[in-house]
Amino acid sequence: MKLRLITFSMYARLNPLIWSFEMTIMPNHPVKRTRRSLATHFDRYAADRGRMAKKKSRYLSGRRIDPRAITGGETLADLVDETFLAYNAARLREACQLFAQKMLEPDVTVGLSITGALTPAGLGISALIPLMRAGFVDWIITTGANLYHDTHFGIGLSLHQGSTAISDIVLRGEEVVRIYDIFFDYSVLLDTDAFFRRVIEGEEFQRPMSTAEFHNLCGKYVLERERKLGLENKSFLAAAYELGVPLYTSSPGDSSIGMNVAAKALQGNRLAFDPSADVNETAAIVLAAKRGAFHGRGDRGKKHGGKSAVFILGGGSPKNFMLQTEPQIQEVLGIDRGPQWCDAGRGCIVGQG
Image (cartoon, rainbow, N blue to C red):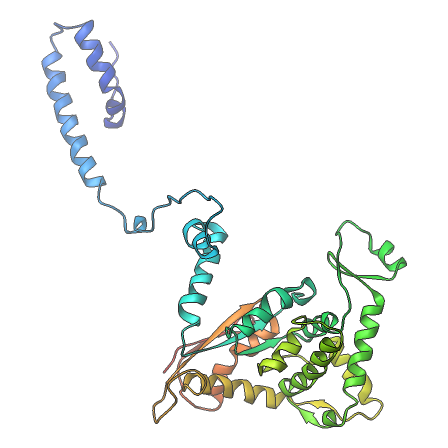
């Protein structure tokens, strides 16, 4: 007769079958009592293990996933809070809650950095201008390209939805410019170039200035063109001028606006961008924000009367330029010094001292 070792886990699975076999086929088997005693021992052991396993892991303390059905009657806030429960949707929910619950507090000054071709897709009209008008954005750093393409809308030029399937060769033959799946006529670029070249011929541009001052002056002319064309809220460059929102470019030469400024310099135009002014002005904005000069209680002899927050869209140079304000304040200028953890590609995280 062969013997087989039955482990506890095997017995736990086979136990109901064993008892059924014993009670029906072998009711008077001589080892029944021993088996019953063994089964009782295993049952008690299993119960003890079950009680031990019921201790809840701290990793299971998160909100239970049990959303209500979407009916179409939800507000946007309810939809985000109640149904965006996992994956990238959960990260979006966390970002929305951080923005609404922390960054929009009355004593917080919000900086926005913008990278990537966002304005050609109409994001300036649909989102950026409403954010500024609602008072949710206090200052901005963006690429020059976003301002250049934003100006198309402000001066009455049109961009169109296209398709990624269309050949570049075909589009070039018809003088259609593409930004992925956004199409527009080549004349849009030429007309926008001509607009900026004409604007910067003005006497008020004939000197060095920060990019914020430059964009403020340009925004005035874009707003005038909007009004003459009967347009409204089409350019966030114009809206920034109207609302007094400082608008910086971290690399002013890296755009068609900067290229046109360089071209006019060859003809004797005296406009020049002052990067040191940009560095010092942006650092001053953050320092003043933390001292409550904008939305807080004011300094009044205290170190900190407000807060500074950053809303980053896309990363890149504008993000780095915005995040370097703290190292400029603390490390370089030695004001409110605190520890910093920096990465060349990702900017700095600063601990307040």
